[in-house]
Length: 248
Image (cartoon, rainbow, N blue to C red):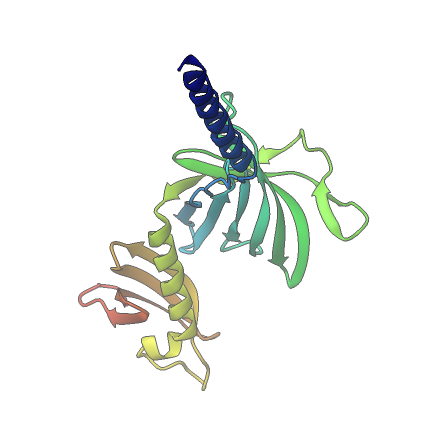
């Protein structure tokens, strides 16, 4: 009887050991794929009217990806009324949180377009909760048409941009693009000498999917200024004159 019990125990032990072995072997072949984190969108903007009635506008959109939030793509545009504008997209990496600046620094390659020239240049962006600015410095061609900082230590901050809701920034950009492309139907006044209107300043004051804007325009001979209301309805943008604006 004792021998039978011993055999039964041995059989049970062998079965349990076999099951554990196969389970462990199976688990060793399982590749655990980390769940990618959702991209984080962060947007910033600087906008100020100049003494001559124009508007300086600088904006930045960043799409942060990677398991550690260390990769970034985006767009940076400097639209200055009395200086050459420069616009373009970028791609690069982001460093860890720096307690000295209470923020992080993105080191990117900016495919910029300015003065009719398209070049790739190094750009560093310091950003955090609430504000961001690009770091500027003397640039040199590294030998292949790509421009880099001559001295990455001697950099100065550009215009400080305030954080803005990305959807709001997108709406502003859509309205401005629409206005510039449709200026001759938006402005009811006729240009002189058979010319065409073009927008010189589109100063937008947005709210949720609607807002007002102050539009300055000219045809090369005369200049006008008017206020308008706008509404975004899906893909449709509706612009109407603002009554009693008091602007001639």
